[in-house]
Every structure is written in C-alpha cells, then in structure tokens.
Image (cartoon, rainbow, N blue to C red; front, side, top):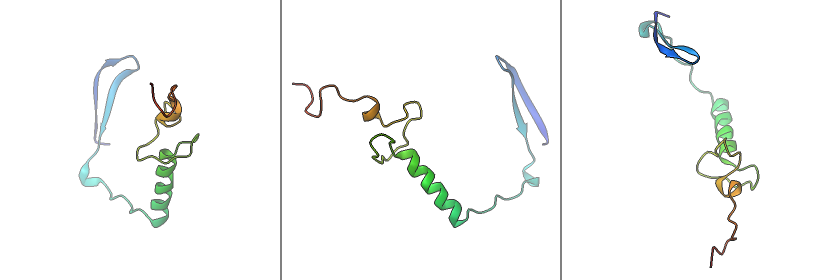
Length: 82
C-alpha cells in the first residue's frame, strides 16, 4: 500500500480508500478451464428459480429468493382480469 485517503464521518466511521502503486502490481493469473466451468455453473444457479426451476436470462433477485412470477403470483390466473 502506498497511501490511504480518508473522507468524512459516517455512522461506521470515516470512509477509507487504499491506494496502491500500479508499477508494483503483478498480473492476475489466467482463468483455467475448470474455473470457467465453475463460474458458468454458478451463474446458471443464480439464474434458475428454486421454486419453478425455470432458467431466466437475468439473475434471480436475492431479496425475493425466487423469480418475480413465483414471488408475486397473478391472483387472476393466466387468463387475466375480465
């Protein structure tokens, strides 16, 4: 660490940002095929609803724990309101 910046006072104390020297940084190790596979499975799990088992194109909100249709089912059924 080369320096730190502290700003303001908040409920939990000051905000601190640590500054590092770029010229001393080492490159990140490349991803292996197993790491890519594990990441793909983790992302698939984040997009699959645990209740209805449908895989969506977005990540399931952690605040709901299920997909939006399972969290807020339509009270009128699939036909809609008449």
